[in-house]
Length: 172
Image 1 (spheres, rainbow, N blue to C red):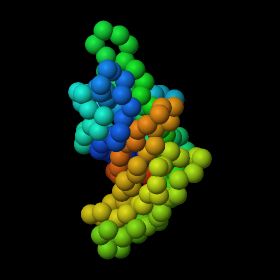
Image 2: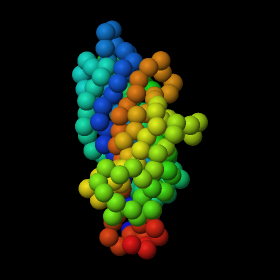
Image 3: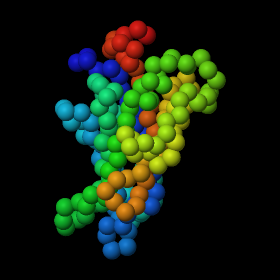
Image 4: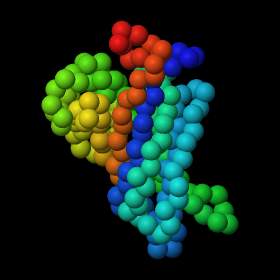
């Protein structure tokens, strides 16, 4: 299994007030990168929309929860290089700690952990790790950096791989 701890479903839900990079709008898409082997995934392009809705699910294989997920929003251009519209990082540690609590017997919708915005994350507001259908999910509002405006709504969900070490080091 090449030391993979598990999979992470990353749902890129929508963008809010994405900066304009064309004459009156943007054609945004999201690129997700992680780790030194550089997993790189991307969403589709949403034409002429500064409040795009993607609702796309990307899956990353996780080897180290200390490695942040790097998200960059680009504006698709036809005749020149795509413009970078901003970026954000997802710190997986608070989420991984919530998953390791193994509280899957609690009722659906129960908040397991609350993560506050800080210098180590790009959260625009507090985010909760909640129990949903027996799985720990965290929806977050990320404030894009290096740009005048823009936020992304994303959700993460852990998926154990049978036979892998898992987040608990194989103690399933």
